[in-house]
Image 1 (cartoon, rainbow, N blue to C red):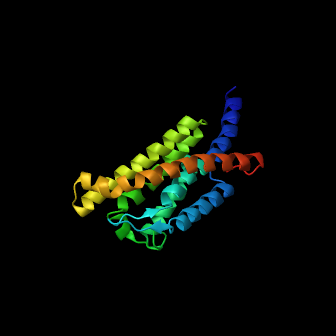
Image 2 (cartoon, rainbow, N blue to C red):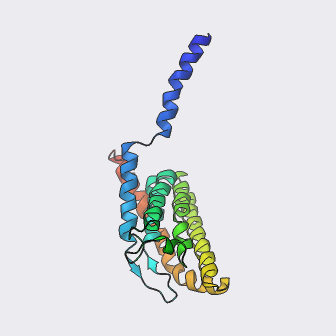
Image 3 (tube, helix red, strand yellow):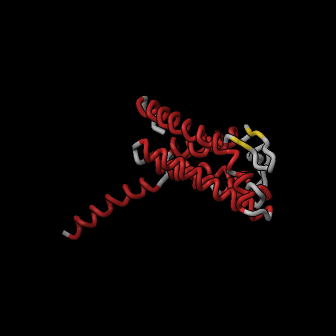
Length: 197
């Protein structure tokens, strides 16, 4: 009886390990989406207070929706690390730790959380949760960005809100709708063709 139990436990171990290990497909998808974030991050419009309007906040939640919370979060974290060590992946082909510690650093540091929130919302399998995850991710991004901007520039939170949040709300709503529609539909099409993301 004990021997058979031991054999069963040994059979279960590889299954657990398989679930924990990342496949080659996972690594490729993470690499592709890291690249997509790098490219879309270069599409930016300068704004008066130094916080540019970029497509990073479109690409990051898209990674979460398409890849799920874990892989989307990893792809975004790699993007942040690449920029922090000096690879010019941030807006305007810039990079370096100075950007992480600068006025826009809060936005950048919150990107992995944004992707995770989008991934959790998408993983729930209904539109309400998806929309909720995208909104929560955007709110977290704005709060982190606003507080860091306020801290670094020594301005109050009202000014930080006016500079970092207010001008971006209309485009943020558009991005949320686009990510929800585009991400969910593309994922379904790929899944039907056996190319599950």
